[in-house]
Each structure stands twice: as C-alpha cells, then as structure tokens.
Length: 284
Image (tube, rainbow, N blue to C red):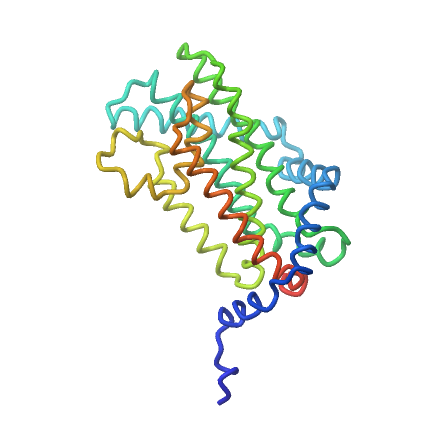
C-alpha cells in the first residue's frame, strides 16, 4: 500500500494548509473579508429575513425570545439564588446579565460553526464573498441580543439598580464578542464543511463551558479559581461585557485577555482562510 493512501484527512488538510499560505491567497482572503463587510445590505437583509422566517405567523414574533429568556432567568435565578444563599436583589441582575451575554456568545459560536454548511445553496449559486454568511450569523445574533438585553434592564430597574456611565463601555465590549464570533465562524465554519463532526464537538464543548464559566455562579464562590477562570477564554469574553453592565470597570486582566484572544484567533483564522477558502464550495 502506498504511503499516500493511508494518509488521514487531517494530515492532508495540514499539507494543503502548508502549501496554500501564499501572498496571493492572503490577498484574496483579505479581499473576501473586506468586500463581505461592505455588502452590509445583503447580509443585513439575510439576517432580518432569518428572524422573520423563524417567527413567521407568530403573534409577538421575536419577543418570544425575550419572554422565554425572562421566564428562565426568573425561574433559575430564584432557584440558584436560594441554593447559593444569595440576595436576589444582587443575584438576579448578575444572572440575567450573564445569561444574555452567554446567549450572544454561544449563538455566534454555534451558528458560526454551521454558517457555511447552512448556506450551501447560496454559496454555490450566489456570486458573493463567502464571509457574508458569517457576518449574517453575527448580525442575526446581535438582533437576538438586542431583544434579550431588555430582560437585564427590567430586572435591574426592578431592584433599583440604575444605569451608570459604564454602559458606554458595553458597545465596544460587544464588538469584541462579535469580532471573536466572526473569526470563529471563518475558522470552524470552514473546517466544519470538511469535517462534519466538528459542529457536534464544538456544541459539546460550549455546553460544558457554560457550567465552568461564571454565568450562574459568582467568581467569589469558587476559591482557588485560577484554573477555571484565568485559563478560560469564555470568562474574559463574558466579563468584558458584564462588568460595565453591572456598573463596574472590567479589570485590566480581563481587557488584555479578551484582546489577546481576539488577536490570536484572527491570526489563526486568517492562516486557514487564506489556504483553504477556495475549497469551501466543494466541501459544502
């Protein structure tokens, strides 16, 4: 048997990666991402259409998202607040902020991983930059976030916690999450088109990370938290938005961690997107 015949698909992929990273391919990948961003009207319309299609003929439409999130926050907040012995006036705003941010983060990751696969028909028929399908995912989840953030605001006002100037830091912090969602979509969406087990693996990892990341529990509840927090990239991305929502400044460690994750993620994603982007229409 020839050695090449026993090469695994993963080995072949890395061989293609090594050969495909050229200046010409990098320019094409960069152009795809830039031109995709400029097609805002296209992926903006696609995102709105997806939301409308999801709640077609529904009486309250996307506000079902707000309603279901509100019920979950109140039910779990009351339950876990009692179990953990927390004051609901502090715990419920904290929990609602965590749930809303986690919904955005998990949404851009899980939808982004399957973004190219779900757009198979458009990729093969629509002559447009491939990155528009990842921008569409980020835009759709931002719309959902805009509906869900109402829950946090209502809970905070109910317990007499009024917005402070730190809310000004929320938009750039959300932008950090979206930037991470785009590189994750470009990288894992591309790999998922080739290896169809990746969406299931990523889904399982995100599910586990929900419990490891301080969303339903507070950081001070876990002594000796270095391993679970300092090495947990989800912690930085959640906390960089939650801290200003709760009226606090994100720590320097959180800001630097989130920025480092974003830069490293984009570098890795660009390497794969540069080398393998042209194969995507054949993989989906």
